[in-house]
Length: 406
Image: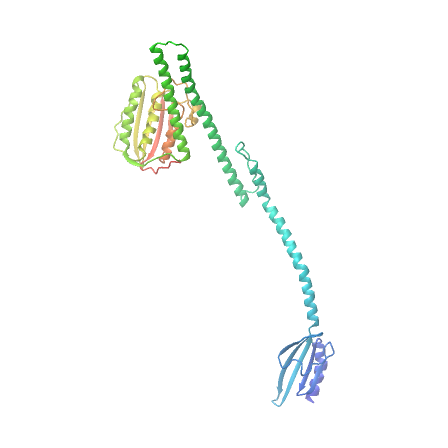
């Protein structure tokens, strides 16, 4: 009675609950209950070969589930359930077809999108490249357009523009230096050649005329030598190749020696040189360059001071540094020239008649002096100037860390 009821349940209930599954129950070789699957086949005892799960290949592949169970420990039953794999294989085939069509399309779409995105992202690089090709040594005024200064390409373009600005300024300075130096070199050469030509025009000259001619030529050659020496110094300074050396010496002794040398220059103009009381000033730096710095300032002071005037020097000890001030009673520097006195080849009064053998007289003295102070990590500035005179102030750290490329 129980097996008949169970068979009825399998045929009715499971027919609706598992329409795609065929079910059979055996007691030994006897079929107790069965529900055909969608292919109207009933699972048989041989299906599954005793394994829990078995796939039967063929035109109609099947998946079989085989379970053994005992009821009240007396009767052993074998439950078989099978379903057709044809719908699953059909769905897998459709899925493979979708993948075969969708994956290449997706890859092509990604490649196209990546190409367009890369082209758009690299468009500023192409613009920068085209702009850079149009920039040459003869025209450094062009700049690369910057769309967004905050992104990486914008920062790169800004950095490149700053580099172009520095190069343009460097080329401009170099061209100006060459033009000014050519002009300054041409003047003494022209004067010396003219003196030679005038002297040779007459076959007979007096000793005095020859001496005057040779004196003129000698003056111009000395001036030419000073110009070349100053240009050579500045060229080495610009390249950072000037042979500097650090040594310990007493700055007060160097100041005293420079004052004695300046007195020789001042005596012909009756200019008094103040000799201050100098305390001991131990210093570390390049002694020859410091001496040149002081002589440039003293020579300028004597050169531009009227007859009977005075020149004073003050040496002041500060915290970690020394300050050397050179003051004169000259007429002062014109207001229009004060911003350019440290420019190369610039002279506030190019018609000054007195030319000192200590400087080149070509507007290179103060640029060299400022470079010397900066190389010693110091500074040189125009402290004041006016009708009552001019004062230059040089600040020098006591232990300078020499930097040739300052």
